[in-house]
Image (cartoon, rainbow, N blue to C red; front, side, top):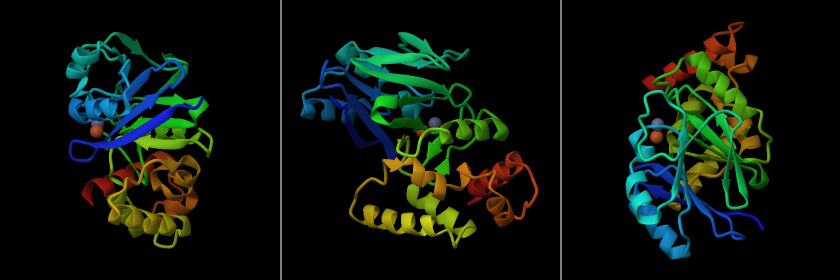
Length: 255
Ligand code: ZN
Ligand code: FE
C-alpha cells in the first residue's frame, strides 16, 4: 500500500510534512518546525506519531521536537553533528544510512552547505525527496555554514535522482525564487510556465509544493550552474560550475 503524505504550513513559511504507512500505522514527521500544527493534523487523521526525521539543526526545523516527543514518545532521528546541537535525539544518521518508518524506508543523503549537518531523506518506493533547506523549488538554501562548492555538490547529488521523484522542500519560497530566476532567464519557457502555475496556486492560497524533480531540473537555475547557457546569462561564459553557482547564490542573497 502506498504511503500517505500530508503537507501543511508551519510558522511563517515552513512546510510541515507527515508521511504515513497505512500497513503498520507508523507515521513520521519530516522535521518539526512547530508541534501545534503537526499535532492538529495527526489528530485529524487519527494517526500516532512514531518518528521524527530531522534534516538539520536550525530552530525552524527542530522547535517542535521536545513537545512531540513528550506527547507521542516517538523516536527522533537526526544527522550526525559534532556540536550535538539537536536535543532529544535517539538515532544519529549519515550518508547511506536507512531509517525505517513502519514498512517505509528512508535513505539518508548528506547534503551539506546550508548547514554542515544537513541531510535529505529519500523514500525511493514513494518517489519522494525531502530536501528541507538544501533545494527549494526554483531556488536553494542560503549557504550559512558550508562553502559554495560544497552546496553545489549537494545539489548535484539531488539532481541525480530520477525525474519522476517529487520534491518536498522546507519553505514556501517559490514565488520570490521565480521572480529572481526570471530576471536571469526571461526566455526560459519551462520557467515561464512554472511562473504562471505559481501565480495561480498562490492566488488560490495553495502550496507550490510538491513539484516533480524533472520539472525542477528544467526551471531551477541553481541545478544548472554547469549549463553554459546559465553561465552566459550571468556573464561567466567559460567559468566553472562552482563559480557560476557562487555568482547565482550571491546575486540571490542581494535580491
Ligand atoms: Zn535552515
Ligand atoms: Fe529553514
